[in-house]
Image (tube, rainbow, N blue to C red; front, side, top):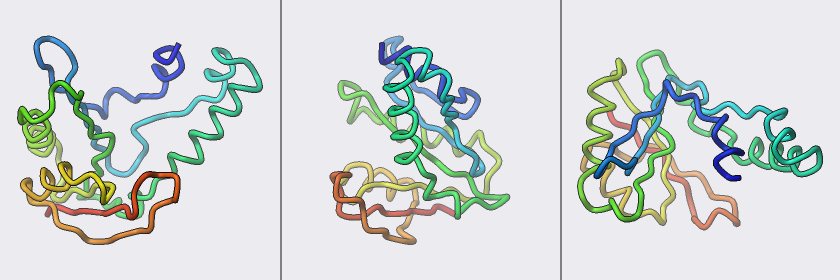
Length: 153
């Protein structure tokens, strides 16, 4: 059911994936500030019914507000949805995928957001040349203290 619920939201032309043994092991999106996802209320309603569909739609819409879009400039790529499947971590796939994305996209600079508690991601981004440019207090339910905005020029 989760696949049905979420399959429609991804704008696939903005997503890159890394495979490990033929399975998707990591993914990342890169855009110029427009959302790499598209929440379609009618799809949630069709799958979950009116009440639960609206609840899911409005909850996701509120929680997926774009904080990094104010960094959107003509020459800046916004990196989002960076994730590596648990069994594929610590194999260099995230590094390889992000390097590939930055080589294949036309931007001079890149911006991303990371939770301050995600130490391994922060180390990865620093290894790739990202530096902290801003910190924002996190929502108490987010599991983080701050969200760190990082930039690579």
